[in-house]
Length: 255
Image (tube, rainbow, N blue to C red; front, side, top):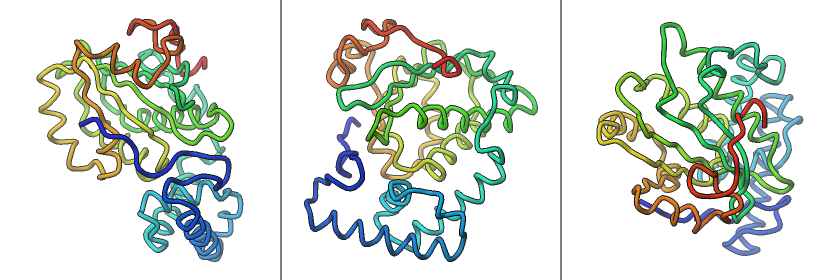
């Protein structure tokens, strides 16, 4: 299931793309056309830079109409869900108390590294809205801490100890929707590690909702290959210490 990305590497502006200068020029032209369209539909689009437009285009295979529809929905979502432009820690106290998500270090391509512990997630009655705010808080925090010129992050989902009490299909699907629809082309790679067999029951429900571009970025890692797999993409100094590296974990709210 391990697959390398094929959409070109991130860059400052539009300086590189693996398909060459011609594809790069086509992409730039489509960004300009899409910008003109979405600014007519929603003047607040002017506040978004070309890299944002490009990510939505890439998420929809450079289809301007589809990308514009997704982008305009994102702007509407953002006005409703992040009216102040951010989620404060006071809005997600129960989620932060679970101490389940950490961010520290970068891989060899300078993607920030995020680690989430699935067994620490405890869904409770009425928690879905707070969990969605937590997801948005996390993605906003990650994006705000991207190194210069970087657009994507890598994630390690550690499922050691995961059981049915942690299973939260509604929450997983909500998180997936926010990632794919509101933060497209932000995920570079997702390693799923320490996978218990019972997780595959939940995975079968989730899998059909994952878009094909995201599916290519997901890697299930066998326990015996965990450290070596991470070291292929991450320098030892940046690998989390719990996986044999030297980087201590830092809670997302403290990163």
